[in-house]
Image 1: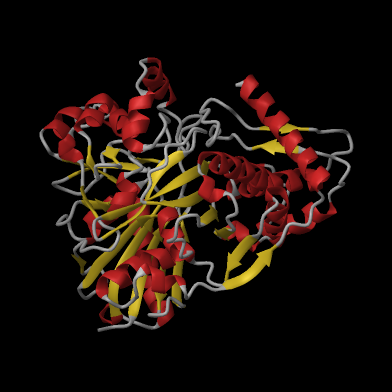
Image 2: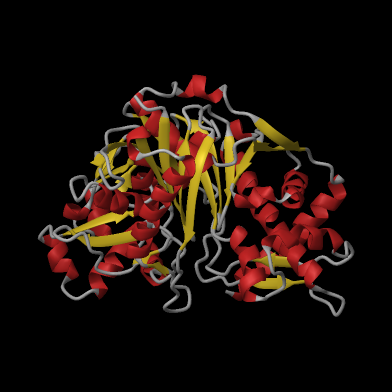
Length: 494
């Protein structure tokens, strides 16, 4: 059997593919950005054909970079942007509407009406989620209500729903397999995370025909075969990107925590076989499912992290390259306390206000781009502090955890040091920063017998750098007080 694994890492702003050796060192990478579509304020869409095209091209590019062929690949693992919703025709595989992205806020009114009807406690008890347009269920209903004839076709079984993993799997297998995994299913708001099954009552509430839904499988499972690369290759692993990163960070034991800093920020705390119900508006989600056994996590989702730096570059023109941000932040005037509350698409956990909008506080005539850039980096740390405070209040096992970090933003030493300072806790950056793709490859390799079980695999995790807190306590508390005041003002303005 071949010793190579191919991982698809289909993200919010780019599609990536990586070829891994059997020890999960990287042999080759392909990456392409694709267009973002904003048809109305607060709306975010992707063209599914862009996602498909860039996925296939990056898979081929990764093979070329690694100087291998499809015959050298033992299996494929898929990690994907979660919650992003596609509805397509079973007969043709064509989407009937653009994909509605996880960041999209168009169904905020629908969620508000369901809350008014008193349904949030029921939904949270079954799914671990809060009523928010972030999740897939209201997105599906919106497409069925706004594309002519779609609801009737869905009822007749002519249409399929999937998050991006399912859409790619359908295309990769030529329409043979319509499936997802338990982690992605747990993000739809249609899945009972305790029973491990689609829930008929939730489907009724959200007006989603059950005929549209994919089969739900383990993270390491048989997902079919693709010949898109010129030879048959098994698809043997699948996970939502944040759960894939959790596996890539080897956070398999209860009490371990990882936080991924990409477009947004997602912190997951492993709670073992206990589906901890949050009292602080965090999410309860499936961390992984192996051999039919579910492991759960508490999750805090921040909608804007690295996207704040993109905004500095592309929206304001304050920097030409993201790499400039560290030096500018280090030069900022420490006497000026400028706060960016990056509610460009609402505020996520623990506030869950889809109507909130971004704001800058503390501006003076002396404020320069340096202070604004620093505020954009600092807001990532402040938002993470809010999440971890909520986790510690929800579950005693979170008290003394070390945070393992990954994602593009972790390349910023300045940001990681500020994160450790504002959390007053160690922050560990791994030697292998390709944790999302590595997690997808791990699940595929586990299924194929190339990689060991989780406990043994965890021993291979390697530290690149630990950031230890060094900020004085009074300074830390003053900064957090300023942040919380800025958030209160933002929520009041909304």
